Length: 256
Image (cartoon, one colour):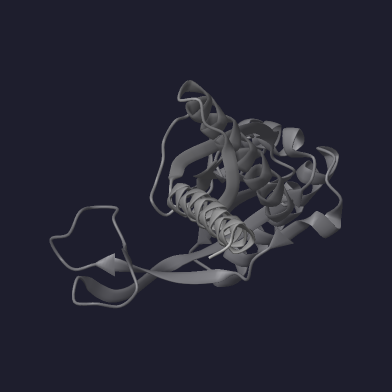
């Protein structure tokens, strides 16, 4: 074999050796990247925000009774008018004041040996069959975006007692009607918090946070202000004027 042929073989062998070496490097780096791509970090992010209810609903009930049904009805209508006038004077328009249908209860005298002066509602074995009178009951409710006024009404409506009306006031309900829109914002804030947490953990180990691999949104917790109560099904407080909404998101990131 002459020198020229020998040199050609050496040249080709060198090229092949370099090719195999670079191929090995590429394969090695590829496997490292593949293995690295399987490394992830799972974090939970949360976000809270103070909100104020924008809709208030108050409920109350009142009744009148009399031995004669027409008299009981007349008394109830009088109470109805006084209550309506009171609520209008409080600042509520008539279209926001709702009265329920009237419920009628017949009052029976107890059987012999029963408690003196007592009565029984509806027919039954404990009453003698003699009708003592009738009780007429009606409910009233007010709905308004002026939640402070609803709150004040719930505490002052018993002033109607001075007008001879024994009204039963139920604690008001306070709602936040834009909750659906706010949930989207809160999920975004919780996701941002999750990324910050992941970056802090990765930085401590000299790594970087990559793309999102998976995410899961937890239930929303709407609590009374300063309350930390939670539920697996989510909280939805309706008793408090001011509330705290909390969102939780679980996110898995890749590590680079």
